[in-house]
Image (tube, rainbow, N blue to C red):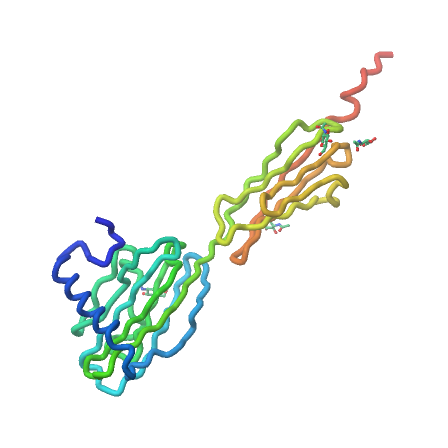
Length: 254
Ligand SMILES: *[C@@H]1O[C@H](CO)[C@@H](O)[C@H](O)[C@H]1NC(C)=O
Ligand SMILES: *[C@@H]1O[C@H](CO)[C@@H](O)[C@H](O)[C@H]1NC(C)=O
Ligand SMILES: *[C@@H]1O[C@H](CO)[C@@H](O)[C@H](O)[C@H]1NC(C)=O
Ligand SMILES: *[C@@H]1O[C@H](CO)[C@@H](O)[C@H](O)[C@H]1NC(C)=O
C-alpha cells in the first residue's frame, strides 16, 4: 500500500469511512453562506530547508467551539497524491502521517479560533500545497478552507571545481564547477582570484563551465567559482599551472 495515501495503515476501513464523511461535510456545504470564515492569510511561503514554518489558518465562527473539526492535507509539488498532515476531531488531535511524524503540531492548544500549525525541521519534500479545512458542527451553515503554498529552498552544496583538458600553451581547457544540491538550481560564475579572466574565455553560468582558449602563461593562476541561488552561495577554487618556458628549451650546456 502506498504510504502517502489517505488511509492510515491502522484501522483502514473505519477511518476511511470517517474521512469520507468528514470530506463530504467540507465539500457539500461551501456553496451555502459559510459561517466558518478562514482568514486569507499568507498564501505563498518560502523557507530554507531545516527551518521551522508556521502555516496560519485563523477563522471565525458564530457558534461555540464544542464540535470543532480541523484537517490539514498536503499535496507535494512533485506528486499528485494527497496526504493528511494532522487533524483535530472529537476533541482529539490525530497523529500526523509518517512524513510529518514528530515535526508537526497545532500552534495553540485546541480548540481555538485558529487551526494554525507548525512544521519543524523542514525538508524539500515538504514543498507543495497545504489545505486547512475547518468545520464547526455547531455552526450549521458550513465549513471553510484555506490554501497555503510552501516552497523549500536548499542552499548550494560546496561545488567541485575540476579541470578538463591538457594544460599546455595554445591548448583549450575547460574548468567545470558543480554543486551536487541546490534548490532552485544554482547559477555559477568564475573569476580569477588574482587577476581578470583571460581574454578568450567563455563562461556558461548554467552549466558552470569556463572555457579557456589558446592557453598562454598569462592564464596561469588561481580561479574561483561561486555557486549561487536564493538560499545561499558556496565556492571552490582551482589553480592552473603552466609548464615553465624553460621546460621547452634545451638546457644551455655551455
Ligand atoms: C518545534 O520547534 C519549536 C521551536 O524550535 C520547539 O519549541 C518545539 O518543541 C518543536 N516541536 C516539535 C514537535 O518538534
Ligand atoms: C581551441 O578552440 C578553438 C575554437 O573554440 C579551435 O578553433 C581551436 O582549434 C582549439 N585549439 C585546440 C588546440 O584544440
Ligand atoms: C594564441 O596565442 C598566441 C600568443 O599567446 C598568439 O600568437 C596566437 O595568434 C594565438 N592563436 C590564436 C588562434 O588566437
Ligand atoms: C568562499 O567561501 C569561503 C567559505 O565559505 C568564504 O570564507 C569566502 O569568503 C568565499 N570567497 C569568496 C570570494 O566568496
